[in-house]
Length: 182
Picture 1 (cartoon, helix red, strand yellow):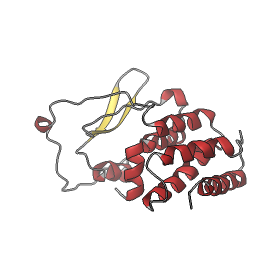
Picture 2: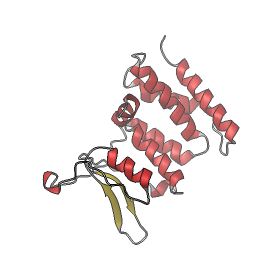
Picture 3: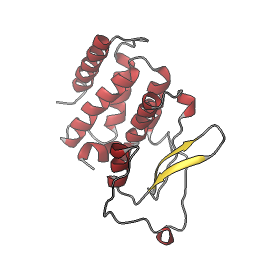
């Protein structure tokens, strides 16, 4: 993982961005998407079908196999990756996300539910916040406040055009950057 993805993982923003991606990739309503924390990182995704059955993509806590699976779908590519040994992982645990501690996930859920250009604003502000944090311009906890303030101050558009998405992205980046202490 790169630096940005590591920070997004630590703040749970990655889970929020994945929820937004799932909405668009699979044409889902926000109430059909749920985040669970799986500390072992063996299950990389799960889908529950109308009949209640669940299919999961499982593997070692490494993103090589899930990425290969996504790129090759519906085919399969032989590889020499280490294989999952269930004896080494006798239990799989799941937890509710702590949205009070990890407010970025709450902000992403808010953006997902509000829709329009709000997910664009969230993403742009987060990119600036992570950039500023990685350059020691803001503290770790300041990132969430920066994203939240940007979401509160950049104009919401319910049904944006492509041009309005570009403009919202730029406005959000500029607003978030203005919050960095010089």
